Length: 586
Image 1 (spheres, rainbow, N blue to C red):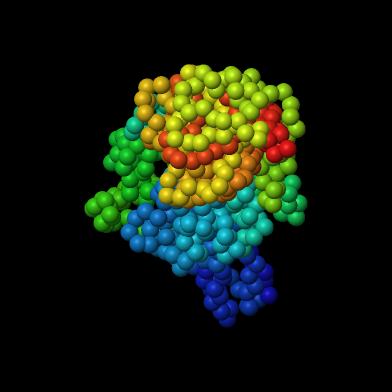
Image 2 (image 1 turned 90 degrees about the vertical axis):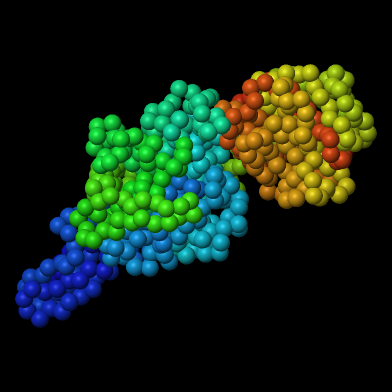
């Protein structure tokens, strides 16, 4: 009996003896060298259906197989590879054409349009049963996941929020998954540059001056930072993980870089401008989606499409948007080629190469979430993970109000609150408008809604009114409301989007913080329930408290800054506002 090691490509591989009586054997590969014992002493053998390539046994990451299931958590830029194309979708059709089976059952889409990690974690129950990346992770061996765009910069406070939720998904997979593999899918900016849209076509804030092409390496920094940190954090929390365990990264951004640069050098068959591969400012068209599917199929299953036979090429087909063109043969072959070259050159894929191997985060940088666990995560939106910090040095407030100090309120127009039992009691009905004009802004408030919560309406709690916006419209452009339809608190940027808290109750004190920065609007309730809306907020605003809807509200303290305090200052501000609750209840 001769032990022979065969490098598998992840498919069932027929093994046949050329001489003697050794039978044909079917080998189910795991992506590594597989010991095979031939029944005839000294019988030579051949492996049928395996190209001359691959050396898969040398790859750091084990390939997905017919017996593994993957769930793909993301948004429309995840759909671009996992769901676009005629049934069963481009990637599944490609895989089935080269010998994989039951791809519809093994490759599962788990996407919510426009969602970030936090939204998907909080709204996992809105995804179909069997497709949930949190609740159903026990049936999946691999989680492939992405963040919303643009991703937070590595030095921003928004990155802590992203790390929190990315670590939740990762730790949940490690603890409860059928396997413990996590893969991060890196995405790309809009064609006009990071953070732009049709309505706002010029990059601003942290992304000012960046283009589509120059933004791609910056996106890589953010995604690699996430992968490097989560790899280290999981090993700290789960020391039994294999030494070589890591968060892998499949580089959608590298595919865009390669195609963009090749177009400049006339190397992409039939394509002369990157816009020809987009359906709008951010979403790839169906042709580009085929190319992205080639990339992910190559990375996930470690199959070299340039060596495979009869690879499926997307034909003409009818989508909900109308007829879609076929991918030309020459362009398909180009997509196969660059998929293999990217996969084997980019080290975080796990198929060799050295590009991208450098750490973007390492322990010497300091742990941004030192007390984080899956059971007790940090949801402070970049602040202190302790929901009840000790009072410290307060930020420099430009406006404060409490039961023992109404000085600033007297300069506001509208219905003044009464002072009873140590709290400011706002009866509702008319807003308090302040003359205070703010550029950057931060607000902390401790409040309670007495009695029954409103239903079927969304009364405003607090907000900032743009100077050039003459009406309140129930809430200003930067607002916090009680959403009586959902029974939650909601923060929002009018015309951009909103995010909601976990829950809200009557006759319960809450300490709320809101602020805006170059990423958008942030909200934190009690230091542990974090919300974020990505987008551009008005440059200049004035404060507005409550109103227009019939809702009473009690306030223990409110403080406003004309800058965004550091996390330590915000923790102190939160402690100050929480202390006012204790005084009100005394």
